[in-house]
View 1: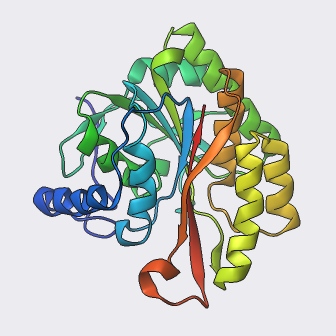
View 2: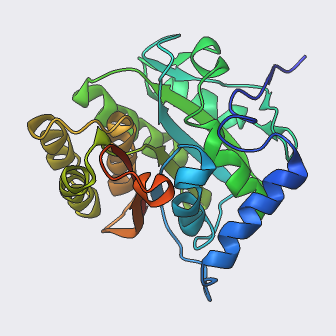
Length: 274
């Protein structure tokens, strides 16, 4: 019997009731000018806070791109559970809009290509970083499957190797044209807004340049508390191996835009890579 991973974030980060969830996302769509043509992208970076804080940023990205049939979502491991590099390779996620199936073929190809990647449900059981992105995609498109990967490691070399393994797996399966790689990350945490914006500006510039080494250097040099930096490095590495040439910031805001407290904010960036 296929494993169903129960929601860990619904009712906390976004509404559990599907009608309420649909209404909240519909409000985002009213604030955004609809894209005339959906952009073809290889990858993107999305924030993963509560929807009242970062949902608009994530939705502006997701609503402006062509959603592929195969998603790989890379997120940080906030819980500390499970292996450092963990994939859930079968079953589905239970979500308010309905169960969403994991692409077992792709997940197992990743396990084959990346020797240090482990099939480990524990890392995913209570982790929100991947889950929070999924209803936004479901709202816009029903027909897709995904692979969740969560990372609890600061090993730059392995994060880059994970990205190369993702690219290799997609090419081998002939999925490179119909796959979207998503890095789930918030930016600077709990600093005053001016300092947060300046740090995030430098991290965003490195992502736009598709330069994972520069991103890693800036995160360390400036002590940027970007929770999904490892996920972003893997995403950039994969995207460049798949032919990406540039990144582009779609939207940036901070929690201060919601709370009006500018003294201690979290930064949220939505970036496309193509």
